Image 1 (tube, each protein chain N blue to C red):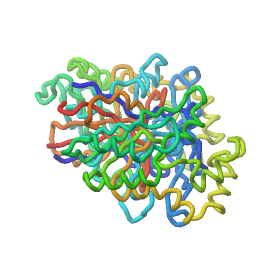
Image 2: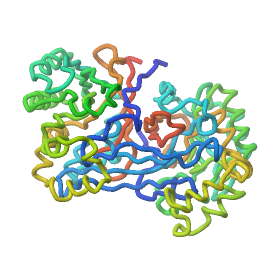
Image 3: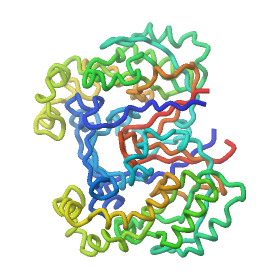
Length: 263
Length: 266
């Protein structure tokens, strides 16, 4: 049995994952039972999918699409994936030419899943928050290139270590929300977040922000926020993606493990 | 190849995680909606043993491995034997049941995960019964749990899956009559003041922490195995031998976690 590697970001209250945008609920826990008092460890959890490595489907933007639980699990299990390694900057937009180089290096005989890695990791010394805000991302040209590659190669599952596809700070929500210190923009379920989403973030502005993600989702299910991708060797891997089984949603936290091809 | 999803769906107040005083039921709140934003996002709350779940020794032992410390090689595409031990509401799995199912079973091979099917977890039953799906589930007797451990250790294996919603004694001494047997509006779940107060008084002397008589059968299963209870759709499995993939929500430091289970059947 080959050893598998986890490509999943550990869900932790010390992580800044899921703490940026007003619709995100940071991961927090509270003990319910403790070994010292109750003889067992059990705890309460609050979170949103953004606090984790997460799987998105077209349902995120289209309620007529099947929920994650209703998609054939064969799409997520034992999938052979090509690994495209992008020479990405520490932060900011990945030049489209560098993405093109990474895609051009893929094998001619394509696998129908793709892992796009940049090697990005949040900087632990800063708690990660500024890193998530400024993580590498794809600009308009790069998203167009990526969509073309998904079409040409018949890819229906794409995974990446990018936490968001486009730059958080360049979005409508980013400009409105991220421009002030974190203590002035408490995330969900704060009154600030609720008021912003109820009255100041309408459909046209939201869809403009989400367009790159929706464009990719029109072609493939998408896993954002992989971690530990340096452990991936070679140009191909077999991946398993198991979504948290929330009913009737298009996005959920997921756990991703990978192993070598020809196990 | 047929792939079966054996995981209970998570929906508000689904029964597994909505009955005991330590349960914090699965709840969700939309933060963005298709109607208003064109995009759907949500927040959710639940607890570490909601629904189908991977339970670890760390629940009872601070030195046990945590969710993010496991080697998942043994949890993906794992060879598994399916054994039938039919049980009705509230019935116990006894040592003789485990002997009959496993002792001379030539389908049970060294290193196999074991899926114990009582029939309780048939398709859709959780919605039919609501909270009684948890309160009346078949479960292990203490001696039955110990006998299962013996059989599995003899085959060098430690991954056990079952369609029992809970594996322990269902709070027989204290928590069932004091909490779970009450109407839902009389037992508001954590983080209610009532649940917090109950948990302050629920100590090992009163059955907590695997103490007899509330949950004693749970202890040997946690100490020696990795139990995965609350499977559903088990009636759809037609083969005695399958492969199983079990991947939990990847909680840093988690002493257990809800998990997703798929079965592969040729």
